[in-house]
Length: 507
Image 1 (cartoon, rainbow, N blue to C red):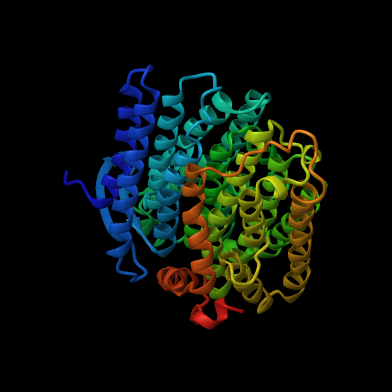
Image 2: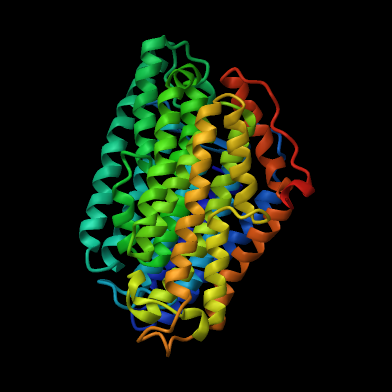
């Protein structure tokens, strides 16, 4: 079969992972260079795909081939506006993580080259998940992403890495098991209607009874709620992110968890629009609880990485809220939020990782006065924190604003209460900065080194994008809009997502 652009995007990181593992163990530097080279080539290819994207709302770069004929399964890939944004995010964060994690795997259970190989494997599988237009293929790739992440946490994390990795795996497998039941249900329905098929375009044409649609919806939604992660299915994330290396935490929260919210858009809204509307009141309440509960727990944390993990639970609450507000403005904001959250959280985790690697501790109480001895590190930490709390002028702000505005138009009480999450975000970020960076220089901090050239190189693209998209988000919004409009028509909402002028991003 002819190799399409998306297949090539999938193959490149896989080939890179294999090439990295084939490098002799004694040549760790060469293995790192090979992995970085493949990730950069993948990024360039992704940029070409993004530039050539037609922005017409339908799946672009589509390729479909019969895979397992008896099941109606196809090797089918394609990109809409939501998928292309997340594929770009995946390709962007991978080389940044590799550069930032250059020396993070030397104390792991396995060789350094395996750390970099697993990262490339995760990149390939994530691109596949965001591109899959066949439900069975999506499910296989969805479950396969657990393998590299399990080994990245369990092989290279902190003292409690085994516990965190197993907990992550068990929660994810439970969610995947329930989704599998719904996947089987879709097969039965499609087989009854004629030729069995897992293609999204075929499944959307099925006539599903009300009760059946609701049960199928619940199977998918539970799996995505665990992945997202939403309260009360969130408890695995603080352990996993707290024990993982900073780079692994970026991949976990910045990319892998987005599969949950992406799945809610593509499958919950796309395949089960009536059930999605039926579940909206409960989902919005759960999202609101996630916003406030995650923020409150973040305030009380004594560990920097666990604090950042809880902030992400709060942010994912906003994303889910925008999705199930069932307005085009809310859904556009949520998709943009997924991209911007990936940027801001990556910056925050990486700078926190730099800080922790120098001090040898993640406890907030072990810091103080860092800004006096490492001003660049402290300034970057403050910038990343302000981005996380959605400061106007930085990219997360417009996303959060659109989510709240879109939610307010249909669910005023939910939106008004959710604003408290913004207040709490300012509190936990500024308290963390005050306790770690300001005040007298504590013992052990006086010799702390500032950021080096490699570390600045890893952070710089994130800083540029956070500022650039904060001032001018329109290019990304224009890519997202057609897919959002198509999804809203599917659920019976036809209002158009609004144009975002440059001046609005400057407020």
